Length: 408
Image (cartoon, rainbow, N blue to C red):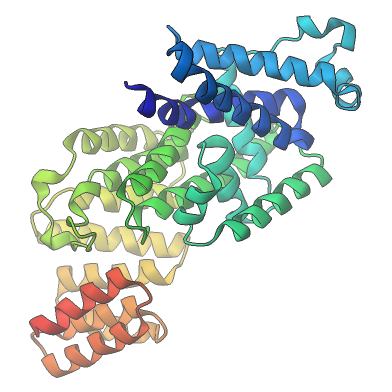
């Protein structure tokens, strides 16, 4: 890899590792110090490598610089040293012996422990996602703002308040106890699920960024699956869902960034390796004695990897949606169930069910009604599409709906 590409690549992969390990060493009160040391490490690379050349082992070079900077900081800052001396069990005179462990195992453990820390119930879901993107995924503030469709100031304030809250609550960077881990794991999985959705359903035209969000969510979920404390059926179910959804990533938008609906996608663009992995993880997830929403959503996603329009396919999807709505009702799931009903039992039955939902402030609702009335009452179909167009907020959705009106 050439030098201009290498440092950004290493920043994405190594910044988060260095930050997580130093956060674990210094404690939650000193997240900014860990981030600063990691940032300064990469700044040193930018200043040094163009003149002295790329080191033989760039990653090892970064780790050495980060360790030295961490030790220098502790040695230089007497107040900081006093605060963490008991925690790291060393005095100033013994600073050289401090173990800054950047081994693969400690990096993985630190990232997982940090994941549980930032998913603490004392901070909002939005803040959890922001912290995950910054600390565990190595995203810059500009990238986070772009990914979450907001501005830098909002992100900076959100992260500042979240870090301050974690400090106030004195949250420890560690795995929760055995009695607590299942409860906390649910919050962690929700955050990863939402993080994945930020990428998969993102309105950003930055394709690389959208894919990165999904890949980072999958990477962190895979770390959970590999760890003995968190290797549970529900984790594999979420991982399966992510694989199935990601398999259609390339087929969902055209070169202009316009959405391609499921029925119009080129299935040769679907990633068969990811589909196979999704099936593998779904089979593992079936070993538990509890069905979660992730199990049901993954099973629905599995049926969508079969392009052929059969009654069996849509009847299975319909029954899975029925179960999903019993576990956790959501308007979008209810809409999607109604579409499955139309495919399994016909449009007339689906129209009756759809109009009961009454989601009159939702453009997806009117888009669905437009689809259901198409071929039955084209005038009603057009009116519903026009209502959907007036409610749509993004350019992508407006383009998709306008095409439906034009076809009518």
